[in-house]
Image 1 (cartoon, rainbow, N blue to C red):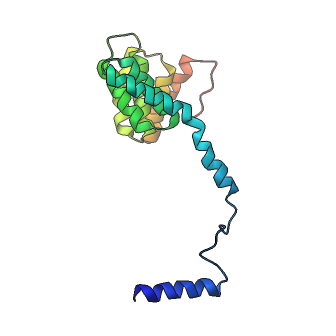
Image 2: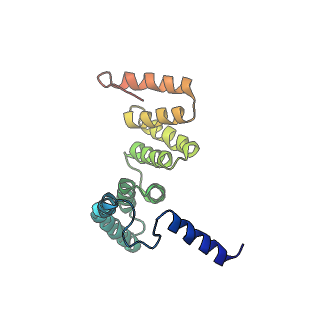
Image 3: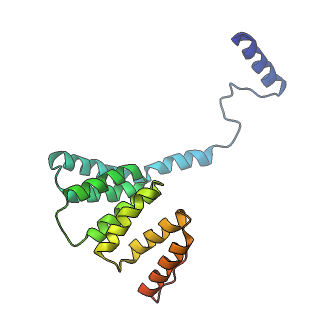
Length: 172
């Protein structure tokens, strides 16, 4: 069937249905859509901060704190792949410090956010090696087990969590 025939059929069908495909106004109310699109500027300040951090990284690529800040802001606005890469660079350039449990926990969370569940286990276990009482990282491990459908391990992890903070309710 030729293009011309198809166009004629479509125009005839639209005419028959009393539907003008060349209408100036859309046939549905898009006022909510316009408002929703204008909300995209909500993170404008955060994107400017991300640009500034990336500018700083160009001039000092070995400063791990810039990568930590970049990962934080990228994660906040939903740029999870960029956050993951920044976390990896933070680990690469960070000197030995007492915050490895948080650093590796954040890396694990970045993997989980991207759906890379298998890659999350190693940094979770590493984070717990540095601080076995870190509740957030135990929550990451619990999430890992649930997502992998390893329910016995999840139950064990839940028991550990309950023992670490008896006043807190852990729902998962």
